[in-house]
Image (tube, rainbow, N blue to C red):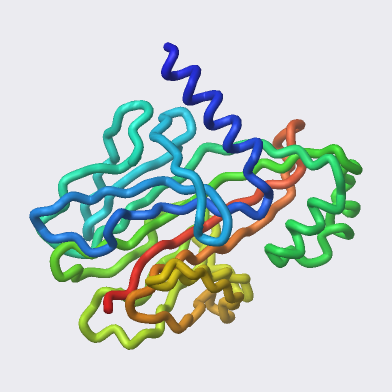
Length: 266
C-alpha cells in the first residue's frame, strides 16, 4: 500500500512539473541486442531528449507490449520496476516496443502558456478555434495521452514495423538496422488509423557525445515524412495532434502525443 501511495505521489509530481512541451519516449539501454541478451528500456519524460526515468505504474498504463512480427506479448512487470522493461530478447528480428499511457489532465491558468504550446506544436489558429468552440478563458484544462514506440534490433534485426493500432503512431516504413539502409528514415504518422497529412514532426538527434540537435519536418499528402539520419546517432521523433473535447466537463482539448525512438548503427 505504501509503495502504491509513493508511486502515485511520484507520478503526480512528475506530471505537475512536466511542462506542456515535454516529450515522453521509450529509451532502450541498447538499440542492438544479441539473441542471447535482454531487452531493457526505460520510460522517459523530459525535454531535448533528456529526462527523468518513470517506474512501472500499472494505473498509468493503457498498453505496454513487445512486438516481433505477428507476435504481440504484453509486458509483465512489478509495481515500481525501473527500468520498466526488462525481458529476455527473442531469437532475432526487429522488436517494436509499444507503450500507451492513460489520459491525464493539465490546467492552463494563462492563455500565453497555451498559445506558446500551440505555436510549438504547430496548432494553427488555435485562439480562433478555441473561441469558435465556445471554450472558456483560462483557467481551462487539456486532456493528454502518450503513444510511444521504440525500434530495437535483436541479432540482425530483420523485419519491419507496421500499424499496431495506437491512438496515434509513427509507422516506420524503413528499418534503420537493415544492411541496405540508405540513411533516409521514412515514417508515416496516423491518428485513429487515418493518415496525418502536413503534420509537423519534431526530430531530436543525439550524437555520440550526447549533443542534441532539434529539427522540424512535415509529412506529405499521404502522411509520410522522409528524414535524413546519421550512423551512430539516436533519434526521437515526436508528433502531436489536438482535438476539441465534446464528451467531458473536465477538459476542453485533447492532445495525443506520438513518439518513435531508434538508433542508426555505425
